[in-house]
Image (cartoon, one colour):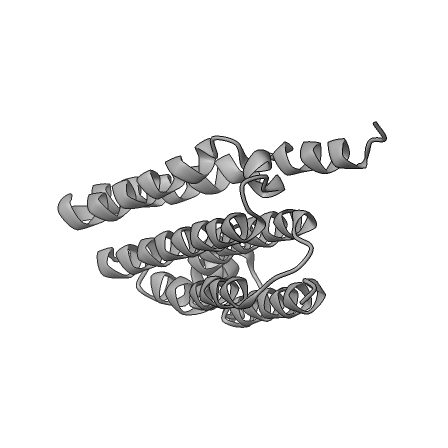
Length: 202
């Protein structure tokens, strides 16, 4: 089957995830900036981080499927696994906010990020296997440095929060999660280059 239904469904799920997250934000009781910071300060920060992550996955998912013409059952199930992991973002983001960055919610949030990264890798791998030895996606991602480094940062963050007592461990974990987001926000032109080459005559 063609990818249009898969892409449309995925876009809809990601839009709903973002909507649910923003609806979790608390409205300040007062009308001063201090009320906003006190009521929704951490909520805005956690929402921003998760929004960026959802945007990163949407962007990469969109680019990846430019190199996919047709999909079979394996790709559909791998895509559903990715959407399942991403659909947990509102829950793990909300818990981390409610707890004011306590250790266990931060660890669970890190596990959520890690599972989403693994699910994306599995989806990418299934597509490459489906496309065969001359896979355009395989050629586009190359060594996939960022894809390999990201799980290392997630694991480092999770272990830091678990093993280092107090706020220092949690701070290192959050720094790792933010660092990965910053790394992926930088535009990645690998797939764009392959698409451009395939569209260039001769």
